[in-house]
Length: 325
Image 1 (tube, rainbow, N blue to C red):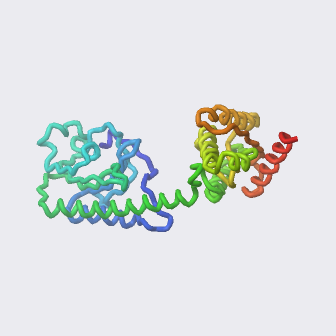
Image 2 (image 1 turned 60 degrees about the horizontal axis):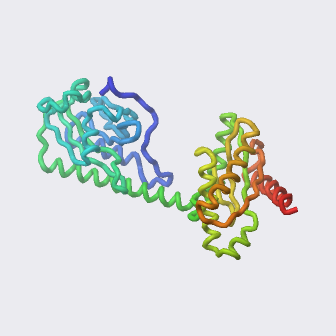
């Protein structure tokens, strides 16, 4: 494995800020597995786009693979077989099966035995594997197989809590109609984005968008159509800015976008791109034609998010009055 792997100190393990999930608990579980099986190594391995990452590794000196180790997804390792088949895998002696001839765990690092079970996210997608490895041939009896499956159930229960917590967090900061951040979510993420911009010397601008005569749309076409307009705005904003930019719905028909730029002209370009996108979507979405007013302010000062929103709002109102006049 060592010749085919790269090291990454970042961990993909999700941690719960309210300590619903304790990584110490997972570490103890992995250590217990190695101890009960009298094995030199055991792991919780996560399957990611980068490959197979050792998320938790048993802490005895005989274990050659540290937490953070990543193996490329195409390498012929035991964990890959489990993720592909979604089935438990027990190899008592890998030297007796030619399918493991290209396995670096066997022929580079000397492992002979492997027992692993798949671990799944609540969605049913594979999280990875929970496994134990030995340098010698093994003959695990049924009780041992039942034990590793039971410990895997404990890990999956924790993943369910993580998934439920993440979903609650998403619901708490997301506007369900537009699909973008609500005011609370925008404030939280915008503050983080401003701090990051200050550290990286990045320029930010704040756009404040308001639908012109939105009340008239509701009165003439009904609130259902008004809701469709709000949904469209969320979609257009999401498609018109970078993924790293922060979008929010801060009022009934009021939206904001905190965007990064290199030159001041880019802010005007983003504004025009957003306005043009609404024109192209009207016929496609079968919605009444509407216009929006967009205010802009520089977000590179020491002002708070609330103060920046007020500045952008005032600029938007000024532009709206110019249109009406």
